[in-house]
Length: 111
Image 1 (cartoon, helix red, strand yellow):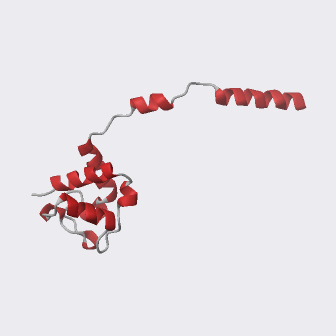
Image 2 (cartoon, helix red, strand yellow):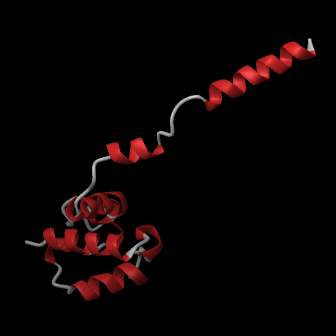
Image 3 (cartoon, helix red, strand yellow):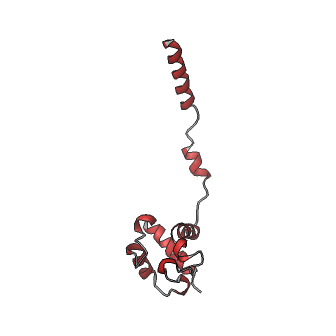
């Protein structure tokens, strides 16, 4: 009985260790986003609930981004520190590159 359990566990261990390392395959198969696509994706995930897809929604007192005349530096400061009901986005966006992509996307919403 003990020997049967041992072989069964050995068999299960063998099944779970079979296969190839797919982590490198998965990364190769993923499409690479351009900075513009990344900015649009990050904006959609993190900003549309208040600003809307086109930047005009104004939920929770959010500004109409299509009317914005802020410079990149001013936008970055708001993203880093937040403003009014908008929380700081630095931790959410994680990197300067992501923040720059979102800034560039925000600028495309302007009229």
